[in-house]
Image 1: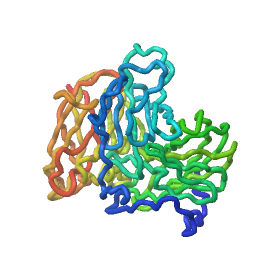
Image 2: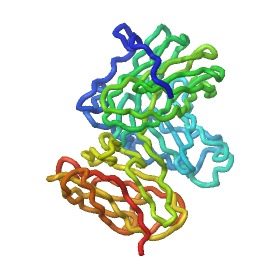
Image 3: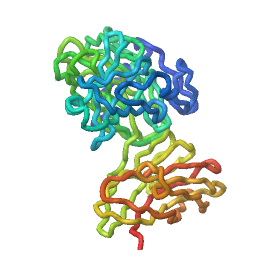
Image 4: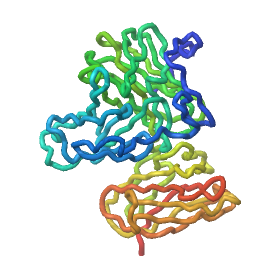
Length: 420
């Protein structure tokens, strides 16, 4: 990663605006044209809006994210999406080791949208069901879990050739034949922290076009491959950026080397909160230390505070914000769960929930009431319960069930200690 070489004139008043950027209110990315109030999400897809598809079912997970359960994969590998589905910016297999993104192919008028399944699924539909997480977003916005999507519909184009092309379910910056053109957005970050950055694009040009994506002054680079057609979209992981402060940032996409007649069709740039530390490792004594810096924030305000005197998850003021840790056990066992929490005067009494591996069972969910200390960074160890875990990968999610006052608490770490 390098510092931004982009000159300020790229963002000058002379820039040719394709669509006026949305208004940001109360610190949240919200697009006035979409009627999105501060911190409000686009509505989730209603599962009952259309009959269940022949290949399985669709469940809403959260605003902007649905889960496709594919019990009968089509033999041709083309998973046709029900009509009227919002614009898809990412589709990924959920039941694999790590995300595996899938291409999305549309007809020229976007009346038909299909997710392209991997070859083994199409060749052997009886091999078992597939689970696909689908992210949808038409207009630039931020979701309760902290994901931010910057879409073509709200982009500002600088240059002579690139312009917005739009069909319901397929908005993209196309006709990008001049490598000197650029696409940009204004981003208002509601929290500082680490983000994974992805680009959703299509291209029928030969491989080799090079791009630079400036996110808040840090530049990520990537090389585009042909996706197989101008209406077949793929996601390109670009890397991670750390936004050191909340507030205004600039995001810009620029071509540094063009191969073929056009740069690409650009659909979206996505930012997703990422872990700022390292995956926790089980110690030789069987314990596991889940430090705040090793969590991934799922929210819009919660963040890891790296100052030496803090080193904690803080700003826990929204009930939808949560922290997640993923960890692996090489030795199974029963563990005491110890939380190191702090809470300022007058803020005690919030109810927190700790769920292992999705919860849903009494032996996978623990709750505790936050105890007031002399300050948010006056930490007190609390054993909140016991959990039995098998060898393998696990996930812990901690978040408020109820915030009693202004903020729930600060949590520096969670420890899993083998029970005696």
